[in-house]
Image (cartoon, rainbow, N blue to C red; front, side, top):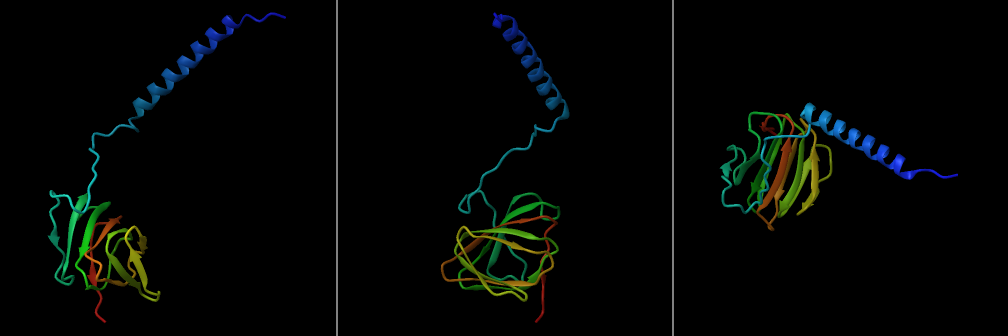
Length: 158
């Protein structure tokens, strides 16, 4: 039996092209894939970063906003702690997702053992859970922190 493959190839090509065009058209109409927002890439040593002093109850600490606004949800920032500096017990209204960029830091959450963070370590802190930290001598310690809710830090008197 002889099958004319040319007859079937053009049909496959024609219908394949229609599906491709239809899929591209419906994707672009939804607007799901396009953003006018610019991408960014930062290191802790970039000269254009503006380091701000942290609240008074965090002496020896500073921060710089990487993305977002400190009063809005979805904030990304670097938090710097000078060597041999303790961060007092405090809480946040937001969970924290952190990566230690430089230094070594001990972090203690209430009712949990102290954890040693080394450069490259990811850490998660639940919202409202009291915690404290200490940047060790291999500092400064710089954390990348992402918060879901607007920033706040409330010191805990002990």
